[in-house]
Image (cartoon, rainbow over all chains, first blue to last red; front, side, top):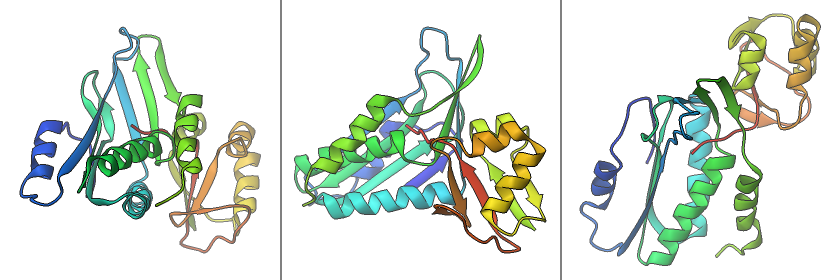
Length: 151
Length: 80
């Protein structure tokens, strides 16, 4: 399930709901990304999406994750709009029979979301606002997945 | 009448996020029209990492724009 929301969410509630009623999956991995204050330099993080396109593009990578790793299910919840320091920005959960596939699919999805998903991120602070583009590390992180042979 | 959308730093630079453009029949014609009005925006649209989506699908190079098309200029993306 892929959700974009302009409202705060509780990652614990999402994880509980994602785990509920599963009797065969065995392993669930999750990741929660929080907005950083950067020692006061960032008072608000603002995320823009392209409604329709953003969900569709994330859906494509979710299908890749399903094809590549032995995952039974996955959940992605991403904030848009204005986000305060400490608030969750992104939540990813993956369910699989065994832990390795769950961990790897979660890692793969986050690397994709950081550098390829259609979001635009602006940091507002006392010194004004600036747009954030992917860092070199984000490109290096996603290129890890090019080298590994799909299963 | 195509609908043109700008995202991220491109909309801040242009001072608009969305507008209708009547005269452009292709993406290259649209780029030329926008650059003639606002050379700084024209340069930014041609800048590294800026992708174009036509009716919500990424296109590379030029393409014809239909009368009800939606053209979006997408600067480098960053989520999470």
